[in-house]
Length: 405
Ligand SMILES: *[C@@H]1O[C@H](CO)[C@@H](O)[C@H](O)[C@H]1NC(C)=O
Ligand SMILES: *[C@@H]1O[C@H](CO)[C@@H](O)[C@H](O)[C@H]1NC(C)=O
Image: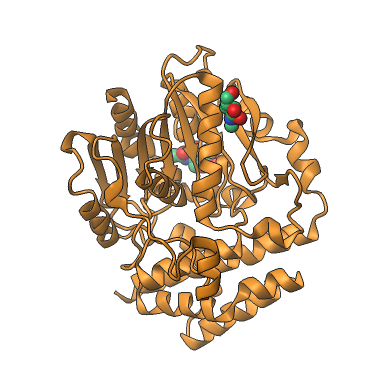
């Protein structure tokens, strides 16, 4: 269908535009540390306490020096202390923890879990608004942005899980959306963190990405890789929005598309987002990511593989991995008895149903009673985090799953 191809293209374009916007914000602001350090300006004060919940601000330092901001909701709205295990919640690409608190407390996963008795921990990935600190680097350093989701899986996730485990002495449930599911797949497939995790609930799972390779998406990914925007932007610190804008113009022109209204991405196929809140969402999201991360996603779209970042240079791959091609993540290695909940949608253009089928094929030997599938025909990518009916549609079944473990 032409329209669905356009939507996939738009979603890819959105990725590029967002990176351009993210850069613009970053490189014109000298004020990273002030805003991320001032607790009066943090997520607890601005998004959680305003709704009547207790909230603690935490900082987690990863092994490679990134200082992540983490919020804890240790009690329900009525102040009753959590009597269930911790849940660590990990947002997706271009989001941060605010995404779990955006809607009303009866609609937002962060609040719903706290009200259901869980000890809620929300992580903000490296490079997002509240996690711009580093032990030695600043976001103005090109080295600060030298990572992709490989590092999110091998540094951010272990550090946050270990931190919650240290603070609570308890094994936790994990909930992730989009890129947050890929981080879990990568980690679990290597047998890591299993001693600290009870289960994982993965919404809009991102694993294999072949099927979103419509002609247009593929062209976008190829052009992106060919343009080497990464090196351009990083090396020159040029206002990358110019580079990004030119790049997008090129794609739109080549495909003869009117790319003026990208907001269609947000409103488009999502069934259940409150359209009167879109401006409010856009005040805070999208959050920046690294261009290297986008190149990594483009590689996945082009190849369909779940592999480490490809330096596209045998010598560099050997230097990083001891082999000429990047090692793959083998999802069949996820232990068969590890409890998994997968929520996926019939209209999701990034976590395509056909791609989820490939993922389910990887999981075909999983113990049947340890794999819960929650399919919603009407749901698209953002519905899993922003739908006004997500509680009934997804979160209640997820909570039932947690309670059963
Ligand atoms: C967790 O505790 C261990 C042992 O005390 C300590 O070595 C480690 O640094 C802690 N990690 C985090 C992330 O708090
Ligand atoms: C949609 O958003 C508006 C504006 O914030 C709000 O007043 C309304 O209650 C929301 N509707 C639902 C169903 O959440």
